[in-house]
Amino acid sequence: QVHLVESGGGVVQPGGTLRLSCVGSGFAFSSFGIHWVRQAPGKGLEWVAIVTKDGKNEDYADSVKGRFIISRDNFKNTVDLQMSGLRHDDTAVYYCARVNTGSDPRYGTDVWGQGTTVTVSS
Amino acid sequence: DIQMTQSPSSVSASVGDRIIITCRASQDVKTWLAWYQQRPGKAPQLLIYAASTLQSGVPSRFSGSGFGTDFTLTITRLQPEDFATYYCHQANSFPHTFGGGTKVEIK
Image (cartoon, rainbow over all chains, first blue to last red; front, side, top):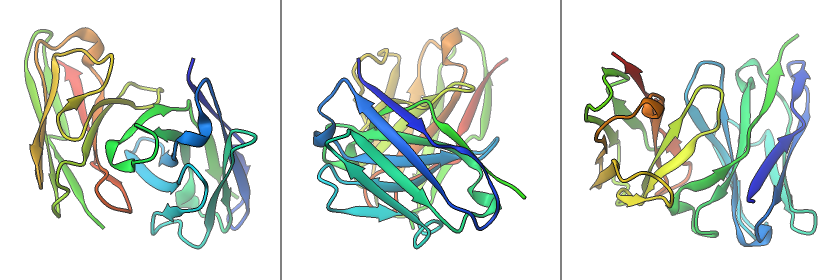
């Protein structure tokens, strides 16, 4: 079965750092771009970042640009989200999601993980 | 950034009803619009991509239409499992953006 599983969430103080990880299984991981999408408590979905299937290109939401870095290791089937300079408004459930069809992000996201919770609080 | 505006923000309906959710983009996104369903406490699930293509395994009572800036998601013969929140997602250009969501509640 196709799965994405996130980990690494937790409670962190404002200004702190956290590294989230997303592990894929049941599919050819290196053939798919991966997004991170977040959802603040009681709020809607917010796109965060994307990395291409080969890891050579990425893009970010303005709200996280310069603070978050997305990367991948296709040998380990993982995509990481390194988060620094965390703020209260980064508090959210963070989902990783697979690019539908593999490499063209215009086709949406067809597989999502269960999410990992990040809480930024002093 | 492209702003996505969904309406209504919530709708009350009964089993068997037909509902229509609209999504308007602040700029032309061509056909690159997806729809997702999210049940409480769960991850979103892809329903429709490229505005009108039904994702594999999604019931045919879901359909999408539109191009450019105006899109609709139609659910015919509403079923109990369809009571959830629905989001549109523009995937035409980065940064990708989502609509604010439409909560479908039981009347």
